[in-house]
Length: 196
Image 1 (cartoon, rainbow, N blue to C red):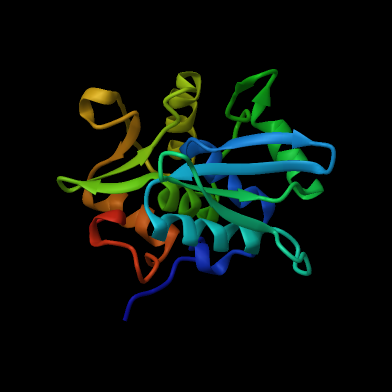
Image 2: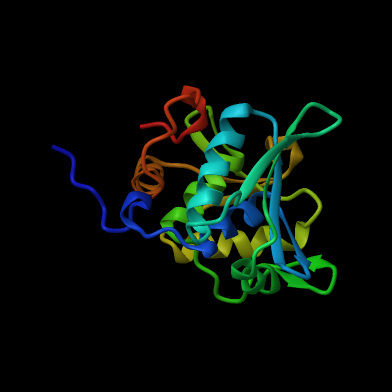
């Protein structure tokens, strides 16, 4: 029998802060008059559906439509929340002027790690890569430090190594990540989740 971690994504209550994982993965936060909107572009329909579910869970119940999936001109999927006052604080923490930044001392929760994995995670040659925002290189090292604070040491890799991404290597680190993010969505391909 496998013992579940007290920190597993399934044991945490959903929160707007879960969507910080999407910002780590290359998502965007935009302030609006009604609050803020979080969005991310992904290639795979299963990723968009799983992210949509997380977005809906992260915002208070009772909204007629908390999030939606659109198709871009390039045929990719854009998952985005409706503007919400609950997202204003998160958006402000991740912006410095027009530039994206990692909040000082940020440590990803299990649900934020799950969101990051859903948006930009993939297994490659026995490692696991969590994609980084190619347009926000200033966030790469701070995100690696944030993962270290969460107990998962990583290596930042560039485009030549399949990135930009952070690479999780080693049985114990992969197991810790998998324990935190829980099970993959049923329609996710095997290489979308950390190897067991």
